Length: 406
Image (cartoon, rainbow, N blue to C red):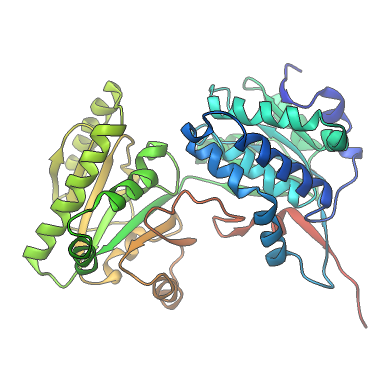
């Protein structure tokens, strides 16, 4: 089998099914990740790779110890399921490490297939992992990690699926459908992270209040929204694709707020973002298709790098007409009830400004909304967490050894 090892080697992969599982938050796994954090943060110029730096901070020992308190419960015994086979996405470079981290802390042997697409972030993290694993105190951890690449191969995928106890698939619906053709052992479980979309909701009067209190300095909000969207080129499921303005239909306030918001974002984009020519063409093509199929569509801003499409009605299929490179829908309403059509099973994150997050969660509960797994502040959609798409990752990747009390 033609497998390229970024971390690990054939021996570890072939022996994976015989390697003992570890307890949740084992000292071995925590120690390795904490050392990896130090190794990454010591790299010169690491601040130029914001996502790698964020990952390094996320796996600091203090952060892991805090996470342990939230997961490990006295009297509940958790152990890794065994071999975890991860298929990482091709659109978020650091995701492979995030998935691996949850798996290691859950006590599993982690085999992670990364995309064949070359990412500097992948090379940086894998190189740091190899340096840490070469240290004598972490030699034993070598058998728990294989980061691999291989060209499309049903044979390899079927083999890795046949030896795993849990399969984690990150990718589009087509990717999941293809991978699922490879059968799993009877006791194995699967976690799939499919195509999703996300929404930003801004309370108009609260945004204007912020502008007033900060003497018109709106760059902070623009920077946060840029991080949520352009940093991943809107490829991350957590990147908002629509901005919903929530207000009492005060037209002058709405016009003022949206102009300030989009103009400040446009300034941020002009300074930091480089649009590929094909993206501009694709956005026009998608807009044309949308206009032919939907009424009430209006292009209110077109600066190539920033498309803003006003819609006068939300439908459950609107978010299917998505595009990267700064392609946003805009909708105005006085009630969250109006956005329920885009809060179905495909909706992952609601990013808010000027709204109470708990109140939004309560609303989702009260309405029995089928989607929405996260509610965050604008600027936090890319935050690294051990809960994702409604899964408590470490708990799902481990098993409970139950003692019957009688």
